[in-house]
Amino acid sequence: MALSRDFYARPTLDVARDLIGKVLVHETAAGRAAGIIVEAEAYIGEADPACHAAPGPTARNAPLYGPPGIAYVYLNYGMHYLVNAVTEGEGSPAAVLIRALEPIEGEGLMRRRRARGTARRADAFDTVELCRGPGNLTRALGISLEQNRRDLTRSPLRIEDRGLAARAVAWTHRVGIAVGLEHDWRCHAVGSAAVSMLKPGGRRRRQTIRGSSLAV
Image (cartoon, rainbow, N blue to C red; front, side, top):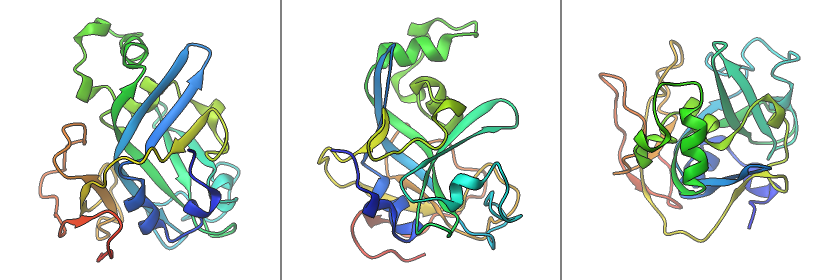
């Protein structure tokens, strides 16, 4: 079942934590691909220097100011598409970046997409590396700017609750950015081999179980 609008219309850190263990699905003409979310990062408001809303409203970041439960997809450094779930109330710019998945459907399709344009064969990819990292997972799932502003609650690109067991999670500072590192707003499933690497010197916060109180 796709997550409801109310799921996303909450504080962004709560949404990030609760997305761990949910399933990102993308249905295309080529087939369906899906994976369990095991890593996510929160970006919150104009006061967050790492958030795209930091300069205020622009044409690019307009989805962040829209209703919760909408996909915000953008091209990063002209190379990789990144997919975010917009959170909180309309007019309060915030989102959760999906950083890694454990593949559960369409692995063959993911492999072919990852191999396209590279020297690697489709069968050369380990399962755990197919969707490790935000750019890799969008390539594996066939997500591009065409999916920007898609409704994650009811479109071919959606996030589902399949009743999977709760995962132990840990919080660290966000990675791949140069500012806002004082915020431990990156959440990941403890022990998942699909989680992207920590930056050297990364700080781990206490572990918690999804659904318990959040101390950040």
